[in-house]
Length: 213
Ligand code: 5GP
Image (cartoon, rainbow, N blue to C red; front, side, top):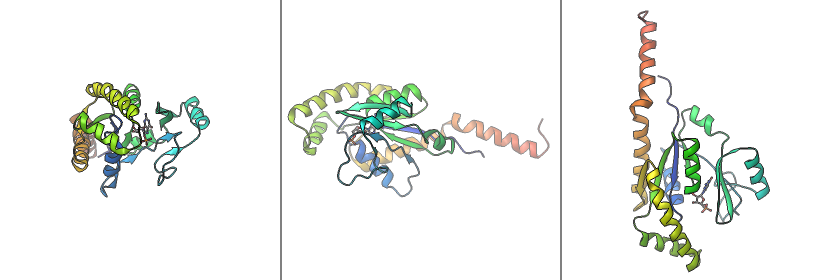
């Protein structure tokens, strides 16, 4: 039977909800067969991050050249830096039947929804707003004012949850990972993704048997 086209999976959610941690845990699994879409960014690399693995790190000028060339599926400015999804290779991987996984913030996810509505949009939600505040505070990277700003932003972002296909509460990382994998498995089994291939397999069988009536 012909191979099924790959799925475009978009994991998004508010800042501090743990998207990066959950995404890393999804890819740490030895059975994971998704292609991670490596984003371009103008932010400086953090210790331990590798160019071409974690991100494609670049200057604003280089990033703006990608925008001009329409080489990005989407991009957004986030806390003073650009982040964007390179288009190159996404279509090829999907054609080859590979699932492509994006982990992006909510403005970007909204733009992907406009361009590729067939994507599977998963919203990662905090177990509670109190917990989200604790996570942002524990990071130790932001002042109280910035945390307050992020909490207000998160309130607006959570209101966009209804535009997603699925909501996964990030209570415990392994549980969230299991749920994300279950969503992707079920999406592959949807009848409209399977029926055409099955019917064409049946048609091929009868052609070979000389009974194509
Ligand atoms: P960080 O600087 O912590 O790695 O990422 C900051 C935010 O940018 C995170 O919410 C992350 O999900 C988001 N992000 C990473 N890559 C992209 C991208 O290609 N496009 C968009 N729109 N957001 C991204």
